[in-house]
Length: 495
Image (cartoon, rainbow, N blue to C red; front, side, top):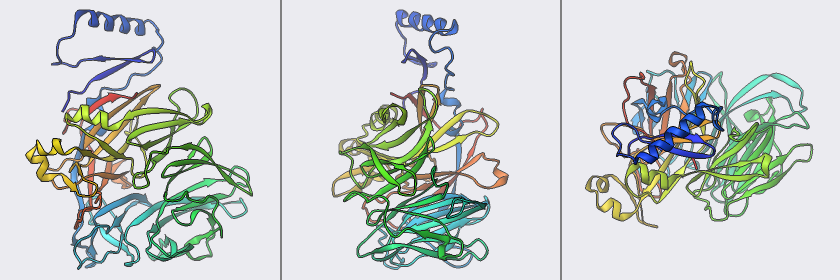
């Protein structure tokens, strides 16, 4: 891998200062660097901008990994834990929940029916919390939602629900709610479909006009359906009879997020902003015509505005990390060309990256105020790169149609913001056994009190239309002492 580098921001430009052991630099360039640093010290344009810590000092680049779950075993109740992919990891009321997929499962003896798994403690075993049917191949959504107002917008005692929305081949499209008293799951219904449908996202938002805590379910066939808390009804949600927003043809509803008090929805190629009120509507604010539905706009999140106050929208599309500024006419900024960055840092050609499957996870190390964000991804190599490396060729996931070679690794990106200086690093889930991991789909902070916020869980695998069996995985990661880094991470400043 390439040597990590330090970046110093100055007037919108970034000077690259080689670390120890780097190649010699002409004297004139060193003099330029010294002059710039002197100007900054004397109060130049970037004197007020806090410099990012060196990549080697980033705590998320120094994680110690241990296997937590590998599909293909029976839990303490004798139930088979099966799965080709882990789709979500959700902390909820002191436990960690996971959702699975059976997409591309090639063993006919394994029921192609997704599951909700649960972990009760860091040292405990994963177990099946709910088993769905063969009508439910994989998970679209698993999300915890809290309601603090009722259907009239009046305050209520906070009610937090764990909601699950599996895909369906046909029939009722349902959202399940967990009963924390008896562990049962009850369903509310969004509508009915006659062919395969996915509720890819669930979001929540307090309507700024009606003051009602709203919930949204985004289904590719039914559209964006709104609802509200209804504790007396099955599933504790009452859904509207018609969609607030129709899903564009051939697209999926990928995610929801709140930004500056407004709620946004991303589909495969569009981003919409909701106008609140008794008769709400949605306005298109962004369109990515070259994006495709299998990939789509991913990870829609709100992050602090690097250029000023308020928040901006962050997301990944067409293998790039991007942001939109609602206060500046939704001006787009590309923060990182992910394949170009990976090509430089990994030392081999990367042609494609699918990033931020579900969200951009914020993380602050306990006891510090240093803000980081983290997201997983998968990437592709061209055939000539794979054929030139016998070890890589043995492990790479080969897809026949269209042909592609997916990296066998589970990597993730770390994002750091210091004023307008956006910096990235790449790191990897490490396992000496070198199992085929392919991608990091989801990352969650440990909900267990004994971890004190210093542990994370990573989950993933992506079948990419390649037959698979028991490939779903989860790893536990702990922060390591500052003087004992366990792996390498490379950094680059955003562009």
